[in-house]
Length: 160
Image (cartoon, rainbow, N blue to C red; front, side, top):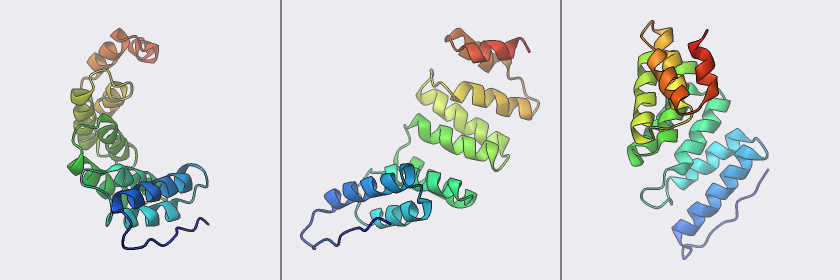
């Protein structure tokens, strides 16, 4: 268990938020204390600077690990409401919708958003192709585009 020191009122909230984010990251990536990570991320809501959204992403990932799918989705939504130009956020939310909720249309929409932000995103095109295939929609164009960018795994999918 990692102890978080008390802060005086004179401490700058931004420094506290950065420190808490470091603690939450350690809990997630090193100790795999996902509940502790979520608890620390909740504390960050009160002190994080405007526009800071990384704690929502981290909390969403921790909640996903604990199989709190709707809590994870809510945190991804909060992060995207703050930062609409992060392709990885849309990819992660799309993966959650695709793999856990079987919401293929929602996943396709998120993958499409990720692609519009980063047209060369390594995972968004093949993931969108899989979601389209699951719905019986045309999907080969996504694999072809990904293959043409040099990603051989998508080229293999074209010849199956």
